[in-house]
Structure formats: C-alpha cells, structure tokens
Image 1 (cartoon, rainbow, N blue to C red):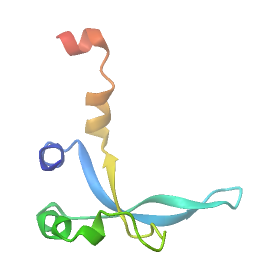
Image 2: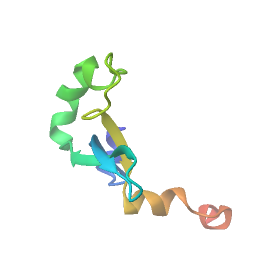
Image 3: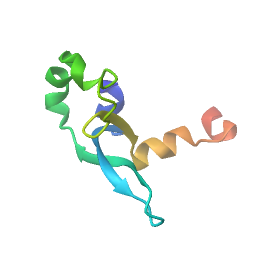
Length: 81
C-alpha cells in the first residue's frame, strides 16, 4: 500500500458524512491521512478493523488519485507498450 501512495496512485483518507441531493445519508472521502503518519495509525487495529458500533465516520478508506486512474484504466494495447 505504501508503494502505491509513494507513486501517487492512491491516498488514504478518513470517511466523512455526505448527504445526496435527494437527502439520503452516506459517506465520502474526507481528510487526507498524511503518509508519514500511516505506520503509526495502522499499528492501531481500531483504525482498520470493522467498527464495533457500526459507525464508519472517521474510518480509513483508500482513494484512487487521478494518476492512479490513468494506470488502472489502460487498455490491453496500452499495457503492452
């Protein structure tokens, strides 16, 4: 995971609340977790285990960056180059 972050292909963020235009509640990627803090944060299982109370607000999530989207959306022909 750290290699993907270091290449700029993904970010780790905390889930934040979101309300759709229709008024439905959900989640969206929130604040960025700084790369230098990740090892310490990941040592604490509470940051990556399923929350006991079912509340996902503040939980970690991986977010693909624009650079990551370019990599994962290559056609077979582009991958062969």
